[in-house]
Each structure stands twice: as structure tokens, then as C-alpha cells.
Image: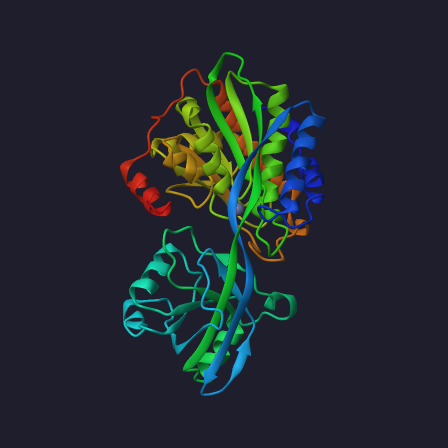
Length: 412
Ligand SMILES: [Zn+2]
């Protein structure tokens, strides 16, 4: 690869315009999709938008009041996609169940149950099974002040039945009400389901000799509502954009498809839509190279490989050729690469550790051109090697253990 054609400063300049929140289904997300398209056009690459619908919600009322042995109303946010309580709420005994272990949950029947972590599908089912009347989960840290005390609505994963409703409460309020001995409370959540639209941005560089063998380079461009997601994940968007520019000038033998996914933060919805819409074409996909979390200076690079373990050795060999430090991990990975692997396409996510993910502190000020440049060179070398190698040097299959983990991950 012509490493001197990869420029970290140019990537950073591109990123600077995305200093706004790009929550899936909002105007911010759509604006970003159009900006990515415009940038592609500026160096002669045509792209298309693939639109898809997402299920979202509107919270009409979210309220939590301790009723015994004192009375106090706390600031809360509602969980979406779990329906509504009766209009005047549910009043019930209160229980703090920590991490929702079996001993704590054996006392949960008929109670409003406070747990530490965001309620995922497993925890939701455990709470229902334990007979909880409703739930609260804790967010934030004890040192939060001012804007860090703000609470954001979050969704439970899509489920067939959602018999109980829940709220989010701040760490410091949770401490207060447990310490003060709250034993009875009233919880109200009223909401309406809504539909919104998100988009994937797709650009294809047709291979010169084996165009029907496809390699994908992917990154999500949506953010969480808390902050403008520079590290998570506009930096990765800039990395694959830089590589798209490079490969436009140095077209490999195989086809490269570049995809900027929407709605990753809502449950990998962009990549799930892509694999559905392009189901018939997936048999031509050889490998997915995803990037999620990138661009900060202080950190290290991990490439998570979901596929045959030989792919790790291959990638490590390629990294040695570049002299750029990294390690591999053979595992499933909580990003869009999982969707490809679940659909039988070996996949990797390039990931760099860093600061501030899913907070308002995830801003471009902490992004480093040095880091962007190195990651783009490393990924570029891997993509160029696989794009030109006579035969893809690994099996196109996903080990059974990963398939089982992915079934669980996607809730099958
Ligand atoms: Zn991310």
C-alpha cells in the first residue's frame, strides 16, 4: 500500500463537521448520511442511500415517587418499547436487587425492583419471571454534576411480550433512596410507539478481475443521544472514507463495498437491514472488516475476529508487515461485524480503547490524526492484501461455538 497517501489530518478535518448528535431516526442522523455522500462525491465515488424503518417511541409520562416511609418524587426517564402502566401508575413495595441475582430476585414478587445495570433482554425476562411489578435501573456515577446528571430514555430490546414497565434513575438518587430506607413507591410510565427512518450509505468499488467476490469495509455513523460520538464512531467513518478514497485510485482485484451503517446504537439495525435486503448476494461476501471505536491517541488496537481462528494468525501476520501494533481476539464482538458473522460471513471489528464512549465527552477534541492515520494504514493493508490475493486464505465458515453465542446475542 502507498502509505503516504493515507492522511490522518484529512480524516480529522472531515470529522470536525460532525459535532452534533446523530441519534438514529433523527434529522441529525440523516444530515450526516448526506454529508458522507457529499464527501464521497468530492473524490468521484457515487453512493446510494438504503432507507429502513425503525421502531421507536415517545414517552408521554415517566414518574417515580417514594411513598413510604417518606415522600419524594425523583427525576427519571422511561424505558421505551415496554408499554404503559395504568394512567395513575403502579404503587408497590420497593426492593433494591443489586445485579439481579437469584437471592435478591427471590424477594421481588409484586415489588418495584431497582437493579444496577441497563435492563437487557435476559434481565427483563428474569424480572418478569420473578414477578416484579415494575423496574428501575441505575445510570451515571456518584461524581456526576450538572449536565452529567441528565437522564436519557432507553429501550428494552424488541420482545413479543412486555408485561412490566421500567424507568432509569440517576446513581446519586438511587443511593439516596436506598440509604433513606424507601420501602414503598409509585411508578408511572406512559408511552406511544412511533416509527422513524434511518439510512445506510453504500459505495461500491468494483473489483478489476474478480468483481463477484466482495469484501466489506463498514462503520456506523449514528451516535447515542448523550453526545456527538467522535470516538464512537465518526472516527471509524473517517477511516473507511479515507480508504475508499485510496482504493478509488488503487482498485483491487476483488470488489470493495463501503457501508456507513445507521442505527447501530439501537441494536445493529442498519447492518441487520443490509443483510436482509442483500440476502441473496451474501454468498459472494468473503469477509467483513468493521471499525467501531477509533481515533484516540492513548489506547491500543484490538481486532476482534469472528470466524476461523486461522484468520487471527493471518491478520497478525499482515500487521507485522506494517509494523503497526495490535493484538487479535477470536470472539464475537458487540458491533455490526456480528451481523455478518451471524449470516455466515467471517468478520472482524477493529477496535481501539479510549475515553468517553456514550457520554457528552465523546468529542472530536480527543481525536488524534496520528491514531487515525495508523488505523487506516493497518486496515488498508489488510483490505488491500485480501483484495488482491489470488485465493482468500481462510474458510468461509463460522465456528459452531460462535454461532451459538450469536444466536443468544441476537435473542434467538
Ligand atoms: Zn459504536
